[in-house]
Amino acid sequence: MSLKPAVPQIRTSEAGHRVAFLVFDGVTLLDVSGPLEVLHQAGRLGHAYVPVLVSPHGGDVTTASGPILARTVRPADAGPVDTLVVAGADLLAERPLDDELRAAAEHLAERAARVASVCTGAFVLAGLGVLDGRRATTHWRHAATLARRHPRVRVEPDALHIRDGRYVTSAGISAGIDLALALVEDDHGADVARDAARELVVFVRRPGGQSQFSTALETPPPRGDLLRAVTEAVLADPAADHGLPAMAAAAAVSPRHLTRLFRAELGTTPARWVERVRLDRAQQLLLDGHSVTAAARHSGLGSDETLRRAFARHLGTMPTEYRTRFATTRPTDVSSAP
Image (cartoon, rainbow, N blue to C red; front, side, top):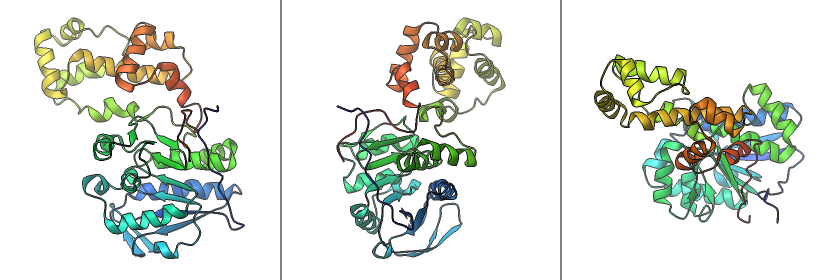
């Protein structure tokens, strides 16, 4: 049995592959413009896509950042749809799914051979029930909400994009570019996706999942100069001796006082914070081609077993599996049937 996810056969007319983008007032602009630019670059390379902006009522749509998406069409006027892309917005995670948006998504999804979402657009697909029993992802900040609101969806918060059957979901905002490159690779091969990525000056496969941002985004910067100096020293050289006694001595405070500072300003212990920084470094080392043993040593985690435990605890995977996952835009896990 093949372990590759089933990729739907997408029809393409003489004019090009028709992609409907479902948008609405408050939509995140980059959720739309990022994938659109990928498709535009693929068209310049001789592989035409025909984008259509669709909204529940048609007409102009105001994005969350202010610019207007003009002359969108109603779902009934969208014409043939090969791929549907549902864009996201914070409001989708903050309130129940709007009935008119739900109806528009359902109308388009029934006609599309392939259905995708960017960021919190996954909440729309989950609201239709089409992700029940399937793997999906969304913006790291909203993954827990998606899992709680839709417990039958198998939410994987660390992925940049996931394909399960004919459904493809992506992580937050700029990950829509990663998703669009994966769709282009499905349609026209890795060389075309690579050339489009080169034109956009982006990775054809971004190094790492959403967890690569966790230390920077989930941990607020220290307020005090003392703790800021301690954390900067760790970030500069994670493999150095950053045990509690050594850090306390370098900061000229007691271990007890340094622990209180970490808890008060960063909400964690010194040991946990250092482990997370070292894990981030190990992730990058693996993606740079280092062995598990070298990644463990140069990140400061020490042994292969310590590295594996850290990966299992924080990322829910193993180091070799993590590295393999990002060898191409294509996911490697078994997917459900289309």
